[in-house]
Length: 129
Image 1 (tube, helix red, strand yellow):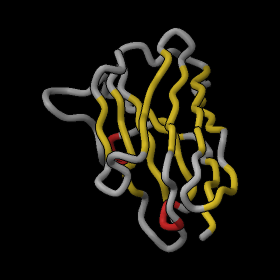
Image 2 (image 1 turned 90 degrees about the horizontal axis):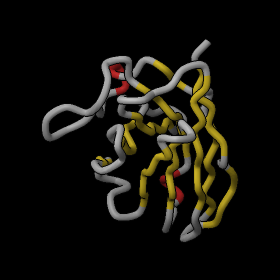
Image 3 (image 1 turned 90 degrees about the vertical axis):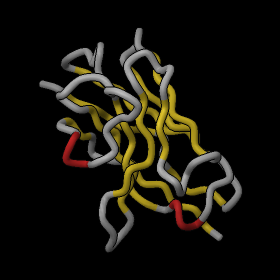
Image 4 (image 1 turned 30 degrees about the vertical axis):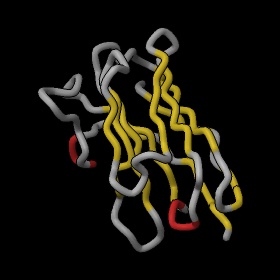
C-alpha cells in the first residue's frame, strides 16, 4: 500500500521557521516528481512547491517564492519543505503529494492538485501574529 506521510507541522510566531518532512512508503517514487500543497479553512487547495526527481528543478507558488525551499533525498524516499519568514497567511494544512504520471516535463512541473494521485493526511501549520 502506497503511503505518503507528512510531519513537522506546529505553531510558530510570524517571522519564524518550520521544516516539514514527507516520507513515502509502499513504493519508491524513483523517477517521479513530488509536491507540496496547502489548504486553509474555507479556501481551495493551493500549490506550494514541486520538485523533479533529481532535485535539480524546483517550482514555487507566488505566495511562497523566496521564503520556502523544497528539497528531496532520493536515497531515503523523502521530501522536505523549509519554510522561513512565516506569515499568518501561511496558516493551513500542508499536504505532501506525488503524481502517477512521472517526472516533471519540459520547462514546468505539476502545479494542479488533480495532477497528483497520492496524498498524505496533512500536517497543520499555524502562524501566530
